[in-house]
Length: 125
Image (tube, one colour):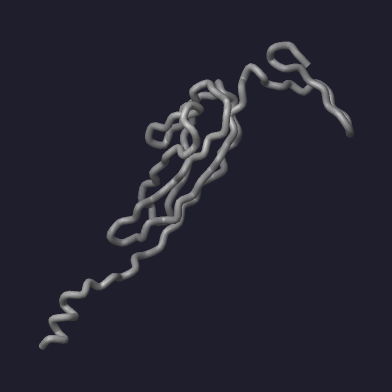
């Protein structure tokens, strides 16, 4: 009887079904780029949550949409899925992209095997 009571008091931990997140690379952007949607999916079909883990000031996040602030720098986005009664939490996936200063955009006008030449948006070489 004592053994049966012990078994009833010990919680049973059953492993849920594993899941993964597919999160495409984010291409580099110019600081003037329009807001864009992130495209991560979980193999479970459950919704993916996002957060920005890089220093503040370069981008903001609302739901799954990134808005650039106009500043240049690197942005790292974390995709996560917490799981539910059926699925275990998915391993987090991180993607980093660079936001370039639009005023320093470089337009290539000529290139060769050993060099290239271009003009920035402000007219300088």
